[in-house]
Every structure is written in C-alpha cells, then in structure tokens.
Length: 383
Ligand SMILES: Cc1cc2nc3c(=O)[nH]c(=O)nc-3n(C[C@H](O)[C@H](O)[C@H](O)COP(=O)(O)OP(=O)(O)OC[C@H]3O[C@@H](n4cnc5c(N)ncnc54)[C@H](O)[C@@H]3O)c2cc1C
Ligand code: HEM
Figure 1 (cartoon, protein in one colour):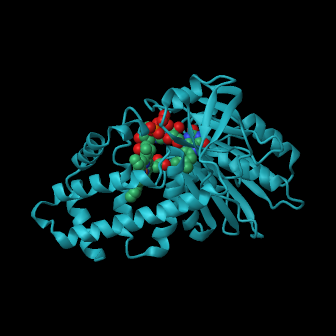
Figure 2: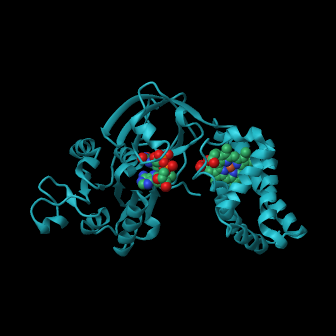
Figure 3: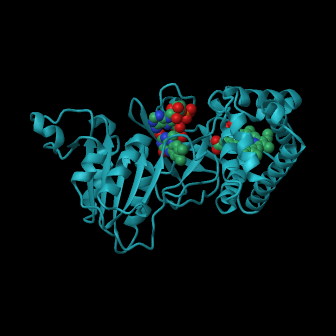
C-alpha cells in the first residue's frame, strides 16, 4: 500500500465538498435499500461523518500506533448501530465507486488496489474489536428515566436507571438515543460516580434547533425509555497524582467534573479541590445550590461560581471582581487565571469549545504543563 498515494487521492476527492458524501450515500442506498433504515431519517449534519473519519484514517495510515486504537473504538461504537460483518462489503463497494467517480483520470488499477487493501484492513480491525467487545459488553443498555428536574427553561437534570450495571469511570460519557429521535445518537456525560443502585444522572442543555437536546430537556418524563451505548472518554481522574485538583466547568460541562468530584470525595484523604463553575448569567448556574452544599460539607473543596454576561453590581470596577454573593464576574478563563497560581495542580476542563480553548491557553500561560490538563468539549465527537 502506498500511503502517500492514498493521501493525495483522498485530498483530491475531498476538495469536491459535500457532493462526495451525497454521492456515496445515494449509491449505498440505491444498491442496498435495506441499509437505509439503519441511518437517521434526516441525515443533514450526519452525512459527512463517515467520510470525515475516512479522511482522518487516511491521514494516519502510516502511523498505526495512533490509528489502530481509533479504529478499534469506532468498531466497538458501531455495535450499537447494529452493524455486522456482512454490511462492510456494501459500504466498501460504494466507497470505491465514489472514489473512482471523483478521481476522474487519476484513477487506475494501482490506486484501486491500494484503496481496496486499505478498506479491507480498516474493516478487519473494526470488526475484530467489535467481536472481542461483544464477548463482555452488550451493544447497548436500555434505560428508564426515573426522575426529571427542570432547572431552567433550557436545562434539565435526568436520572436514568439502566437495565443492567453500566460500568464507567467518572468523567466518561455515553451516546444516548431517545425513541422519538431514533438513530440520532448524542453523547452525554454521567454526572455522578457509580452508585449502588446503578442510576446515572445527565445534565442536558437545550441547543436551539438540535434534534435531540430539546426532546431531552423539554419533552422527557419519568417512565420514558432511552438507549445508551458503551461509555467512552478520557476526561478521567489521574488517581496516581499527588497534586491538588482544579476543575473548570462551563454550563453542563459541569456533569463529568461533578462525577470526578464525587469520586474524589470517596477518598480517605482527598486533595484540595477548586471547582470553577461558569455560565453567562446567574440562572445558568443551575447546580449551584447543590455545589454550595457540597462545599459546606467538604473542607477540602472550594466552589467559585462565575458569570460572564452580567454587570457586577457596584460600578465599573466590579465587572472584574467578585460580587457580594461570591459570584465572580468575567470570562471563566479570566476568573480562573486571577485566582491562581495553578502550576502545582492537575486541571480538568469541560464545556463549550471556545471556553475550553481559552482556559487551556490561560493555564498553559500560567505554567500548568499541557499534559496535566485533561479536557472534553461538547462539540461534535472526536471524529
Ligand atoms: C463527549 C461529549 C459529551 C457531551 N456531554 C454533554 C452533556 O453532558 N450535556 C449536554 O448538554 N451536552 C453534552 N454534549 C453535547 C451533546 O452530545 C449534543 O450535541 C447536544 O445536546 C445537542 O444535541 P442536539 O441533537 O440537540 O443537536 P446537535 O445536532 O448535536 O447539534 C446542533 C448544533 O449545535 C452544536 N452544539 C452541540 N452542542 C452544543 C453546545 N453544548 N453548545 C453550543 N453548540 C452546541 C453542534 O456542533 C451542531 O452544530 C456532549 C458532547 C460530547 C461530544
Ligand atoms: C471504513 C469503515 C467505516 C467508517 C470509517 C465509519 C465511520 C463512521 C463514523 C465516524 C460514524 C459516526 C459515529 C458516531 O457518531 O458516534 C459512523 C456512524 C454510522 N455508521 Fe459507520 N463507518 C464505517 C463502516 C460502516 C458500515 C460498514 C456501516 C453499515 C451500513 C456503517 C453504518 C453506520 C451507521 C448506521 C452509523 C450511525 C448513523 C450516523 O451517525 O450516521 N458504518 N460511521
């Protein structure tokens, strides 16, 4: 296999934009109508996932150490979509037809055999990982919503009882599907450390115009059913570290960090923990009551709430300072920066991508080594 030839070939095809994905799926569904039902009804926004992943795969085709774990995870993820070995050749055939179509005169036998070999290898790694995973793990968990708390018009906290224990590490997330949006899987982070009754909490914020979050936030009731995929994610506590801990959460980015906080609280000697919880306005600090209670009970925990879009109350200078009620004003990353130093801490950051980006920038500027900052953004998943 000539890695450079594959990269050049994919780059040329990808230049032709959205049409490529449209062509690929049209070809796949015309030849295999029975596969259409496996995909969401409205596919805008979903359409380029497979091809984007393929771009990522091709770009790493000569770096197997990074590529193989990615493919194994992808293979395991496909179990919840009901994908089995016999589906792979159909996708492979449509993929090759698409590549051939958009390569024009550049297509030749050598290129075709390189693409064939690459796809066969990718499919093999994905399928082997899926098969191995099937020995120990279900393809999905059924869950029932057992409690719903609407904290604000656009934020709800849901408690779900899985039909069997969902083994996860605090900080991880699961893909979740609701019956009224079949096959639209979205990731949500468990907001608690594992409990004896196995229930899990999710903090969900409504994203305007999105298909799934409005249903979860406004339309979900006790008794409703959901499905959950296998837990994923690496925003997990470094248990071997002796350092103090800094948690920085924007909005529902609090969920995984609250799970980590609970995990820390179970230690005999917890480290010092600072939790910064930011939102645009005070009513966006939807979990502050609970966090304040926790801080009252744990002398090792300091909670700093912060709002970015509300004036401070006592004139201009207070825009950058703490208000009477302990709520800080300013962008979360600036609030964190001025309460430092943090260079002796392990940092965990979660929330919207802009907030996460700024916080990581500030922390590295203040001397926190990049490898001591773990993060998750609530944008599209890793691919
Ligand atoms: C690993 C991971 C964990 C996540 N955990 C949570 C969680 O615990 N709680 C939670 O509320 N959400 C979480 N999300 C986001 C969640 O998966 C959904 O994307 C979100 O709920 C919107 O779903 P939707 O179907 O309504 O819209 P989508 O179709 O997912 O998104 C519509 C548009 O909004 C953008 N978007 C998605 N999420 C946000 C956001 N938070 N802010 C601004 N724009 C956004 C998308 O990029 C897209 O352009 C997580 C995402 C990932 C990848
Ligand atoms: C090279 C092989 C493949 C790659 C790189 C690939 C890539 C992807 C990616 C990145 C996603 C999004 C996952 C997520 O959102 O969590 C996805 C979803 C999906 N894939 Fe694949 N896939 C491959 C093979 C297949 C095959 C053989 C099928 C069988 C028909 C298939 C069917 C699906 C379905 C039904 C979804 C969910 C719907 C969606 O989100 O679009 N995939 N795939």
